[in-house]
Image (cartoon, rainbow, N blue to C red; front, side):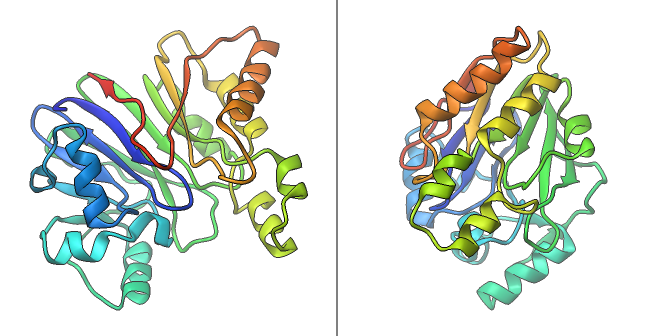
Length: 258
């Protein structure tokens, strides 16, 4: 796979996305082991030695588990903001060579124009990314407790979206997890529900939106069928129909070719 993007894994057991253009190849997050990342990249005919950089959204382990090996042994540059870099150093007791970006400020890497913007999540300085390349606008936004006006503004006019649809609230309440877990997931720095994702899409959907990957689905508080049914229902109330697919945990997701 040369030009396009492909979810390698999405969920609480590890998150990583491949994005490639004519001139550069990157990962967004490195939440899988290096071995698993190599295997999944191989499924789309990409060698890990071709990866030019890794963008990090935040320092939770399901987004950085493979970072130490990839940074130190494979010498892949790591892009993160200052607070996230500090969190990575603290959690991994290791200090890779970071390239520091500033949340809210656009930067360029090869033929990518990257804009990291702030999202509400229970980490030090979590971000989502809007990336412009090949005349396209791509939005990658997961791990947020609620949809802010900034999120809506940034994700407008995207050609493709990779968007969290973490849970169905009734399934969270019914699951056997401790109350503290439920409060975190349902709180304003937790994760997006199917309904919240549907409401966001109902506001920002437009004729040029080609496809939405629903990402970071909870293994016990959501199902692909539930997510698609609920979100399609919210969209239908507004007379909208959006092409939805699931970014799964255990296998690579549906590739998008530019």
